[in-house]
Amino acid sequence: MPGKKKKDSREFLLEAITEALLNKKAKDPMILDFEGSGHSVCDAFIIAHGTSRTQCEALADEVIHSVKKNTGLNPWHKEGLENAEWILIDYIDVVVHIFQEAQRKFFNLEQLWADAGVRRLEEQKQENNNSFRTRQNGR
Image (cartoon, rainbow, N blue to C red; front, side, top):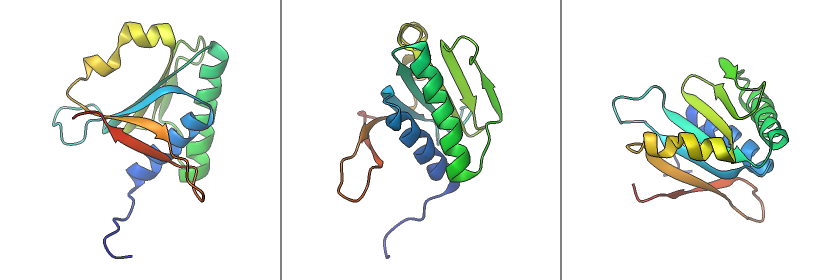
């Protein structure tokens, strides 16, 4: 179709992660986009939180399973699964941070990386599609 941009592997990865988080009802999921900032450790952070240890573990499991299923990628590194207060899943170009709510407020990565572009995720209710949409956050 003319005018449609082909999705790259980064977008497929972001979509697989965000859909997994939305499927497990992650709280306040967002993408911090570092592309073009010139001084980032990766292309993007995806940040979300759960309401309990059990939900955080389920979110992490769903992300790992969904990314493997949809992209064939395994995480390069994982940590925090032991206590599930702050789980980090590293796909090199995209790093997923899943917090319990108190830890998310305490570490406040959104403010720490305030120069990143922020996209908050919301479910998109469409007849044929249960994918995600993003809302620019004034950046």
